[in-house]
Length: 204
Length: 307
Image (cartoon, rainbow over all chains, first blue to last red; front, side, top):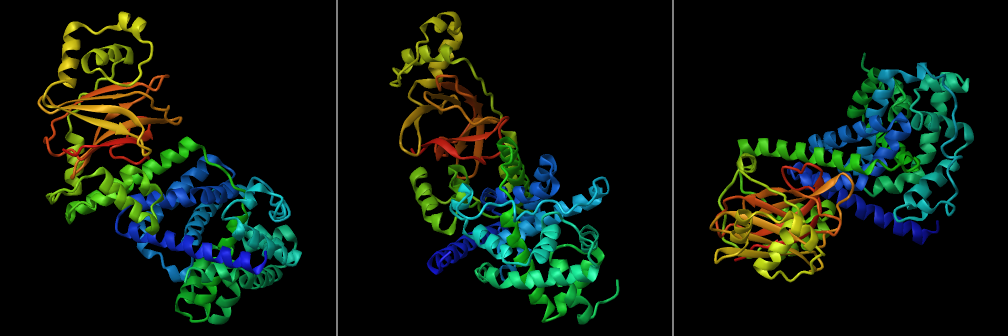
């Protein structure tokens, strides 16, 4: 991505989040049409994320509904300085999905495995039509940043985020000491922060 | 769990941001971060970074019917909650907001499109005098208490009648054969004529946003009969139906649901007493099968009720 494309992506991110923030403000004023608009904008991303974690369409739909209802009820608690609206929504949804996963303790029934790498399975930019669609710049940017990480750091991040494993579980799966897992996780996060900071700054 | 020191909390921020620590421990770290000028911003930044990973999940489409159902339930719950709150503190209705919802612009309403909503309001609603305060509970009660008698009859029974009665200009399907076998009895015919003709009948043309005429609503203000005829409606999406709304300053009143036949024709009758100057618009939206207590979907056709 050359600088001008990145500038454009940044500009779009700012506009998009500004629209989301305006919807949240209207939700604070009890305007339910804003909730509908927010749902239309983010339902698919949220559903994709929770479905990826839960592997169950019915449960994923439940989580989507719970998440948007929580967003409606807690709209006034959203703070723009803490991140984009999409981040807020995805964080709520992911936590709810993880709560369900952990409550059922499904992973006891299925032995923990490293699984497939989410990043390795994603096509390179330009090969996937969905990546060429409008709004895909962020996805391409995130993917590029993740691919820059050393493999062992990327692995702990993927196991934690995409499979919802705890640090202890990641240590079991990878056969690494817990302290090593913590260190890798922290280093991975530090390295990702810089290239992805534009999305954080765009909310401020 | 005990209060964590900075030295204990800081190395755990990444794991907490990933939700990769036990809930009690995460809560302790968050409690520390909330008061720590170094950990707080660092944790927010990491959470934001973590959230970007969600962009990489393969996009998965939800069952469209389920997605529409969830949306409808959310809006119904939100509306009910708002109305419950407004009962405690009644205030004037936000007409622009209501019409934004009704016109479907509310689905994608952004600050930039507010002007479009305003324009839509002006287009649909004529300039009007002040309206009385009307609480949300009142709206709900009004909607709930509407004594509609909705009768859907087969199109074939109506189109021939409509021709004879009103010289309707729309092209009609070949209904003569069906009309022969499904002709309404004389008393019903007379009732239809009375409902759709006479000095007190107001005719509201129903058009699409592109101004394509799709049908008409006949409002007999003397007998409170509402008779709607549409000619070329596309079939609604699976799991959805069309719902008719009478829009006043105070409420959007459901007049029932309908499904067009294979030719896109439909006919519907309802009885509802409305002040003869109260109607602002008639609108048809697409809603989940069974209908909704208030409009949530896009407006397919509408017509101005201006005097």
